[in-house]
Length: 576
Image 1 (cartoon, helix red, strand yellow):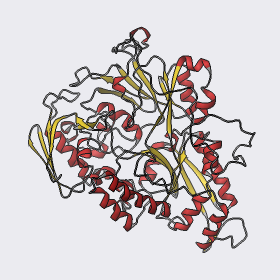
Image 2 (tube, helix red, strand yellow):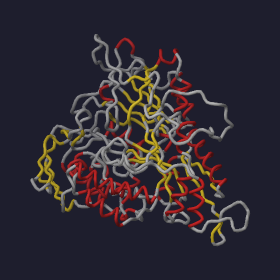
Image 3 (tube, one colour):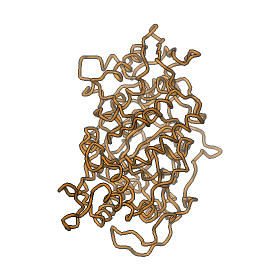
Image 4 (cartoon, helix red, strand yellow):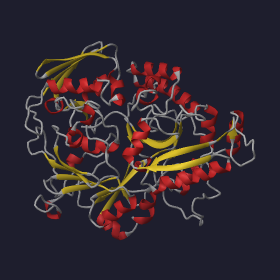
């Protein structure tokens, strides 16, 4: 039920760590405090008013009923799990669609879902799954092996927009059904994630009887009207307004307690918080300012519980290595040296995170803690730019090289005031160094299209990750020139390719961590990204909900366990 591959998230969706707010001297908009340098934030972070989890009271037993109304900061491009790449699709798909197995949210071990059992050959090349026989699609049709094989066929079809997923199966050389409820997969060589990616994401199983009708798979209406086997059924998608799900009363497994889940599209963070305060939303993500200043009062705590939790993600600025001047490592390094990340962390994010130096989740053994983020150092940046040939030859205040000024466009999704503040400050600091950065904000779907078509100079985004990640999806050279791939910055490094390939066949986690440390070191030196922050996420949840427990795996919360005691339920299906 949970996507296991890396997912694109807009930087506005990143919830950064927060610490106890400190009084700050008054500042002009778009400026940073003079004392904001490295080490400005304490290592230990505090979350005033935060709860770890919300459990039932001693006399409260799980009951059915009520709705969960959630904010969605933008709309997904599609809900078809084969072609979807963003976090918004995952929010919906994880409740409607299912995979063969799932990672137990408590133990992080694989357990049965649509497959009731499986076998792996001793050489880890053959995987056989035995499917449940009592599962039906939401339209009543039976789920069979044909659906499983069809799903992988579409992932592997080069005409399907699934490049981000396809790379996980490049060594799967044979897949077939042995009978209506048994499927077989054979691999060319062992792959440490083979069982996981066959059993979980990106193998959310899709219904062959609906999709295999001759319609272009990438444009099939299924993408806006999904049919799954999961605990919730799709009801409707009102563009720009809401996506609604209802509990599957014929679900083959344990039914969820909440009757309906409604995602309201609210693209402005302040509007979302106001909607929560007015009772129009049941849960909302909180920005740093909202957590520390706009929700930290007794009346708010009477209505809501605030929860801070780890979320496996990081934000970054990506440089398009296909375009000069970002094809030069010295320039990319200078761009990082010109961004005062520690000052941003303190003064805009209220110490809400940790600056990261590389491409792995900081709370895993794969992240090399010995590699420190580059400091804010404008003088060193200017030296590197001069070495790369960028100087103000005509004395107009803008660096130039071979008669061309250093100007570029910074692409970002619209909707986040904090991200806009960061971009504005960066623009001003770059201007002092003789670089002209133009900020361009786009609606999420249009922004994502530009990224996937490689039509950008620089952009800001984030990755939502797994604990045991495979960096092939983002960093392998073979993905650099593939439209729609996750290597949208066009990064190529043969040494990294070799290490990635070594890591794929290494099943021993400590040994794989050493390989990943080498990748971390090389990518940190190459600076294809300016790595930003890894967060703790923060949300507010209406006090009527119970079993609100954050876990370490996406989607973090097991919404099928949430319930509302009968005497405080708010919604019913005849009271919409």
